[in-house]
Image (tube, rainbow, N blue to C red):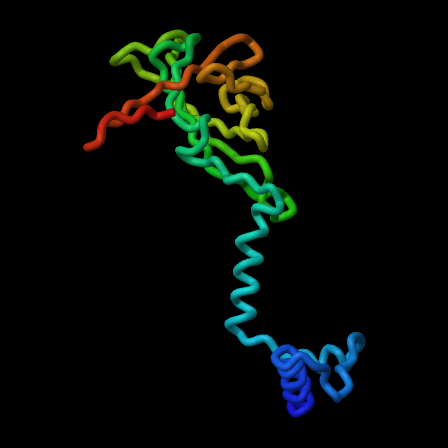
Length: 191
């Protein structure tokens, strides 16, 4: 078998170098004999081909880089006009597993906050009620669906990102608090 392959390779090389056709019959072009006549790929060649495929796949699929953690516009601290001085903090945690055991296409988020016992503004020194909510973002991260049931509210409240904050159906807006970071080079705004 190896002799046949060597003869075919030698004949093809001589044709390319000297410019004449080989006198032996070419290997079959289909079927099991064609598979056996192919030269085996080295492990290094197979890994290189596999690596090129992995690098090319996300670009070919039009994949978009996940925006979780600090890369998401929804991650950060917010002010709530209906509850001045009360904490509103959102952290986009990534894509949760669905019931089939696959990653969901919609990132999840955790929202933590505090409220005054009277339901209004949070004052310094006042005892505050802490809460934690779960939310889901749309795939394009333009909307957030918040489950307010732990606070006695509705289940899927849709908030839309607009002008640096989240606008809810009741007209309330949580405005993102922009942070400024000073480095050796200069100041960087948290956008």
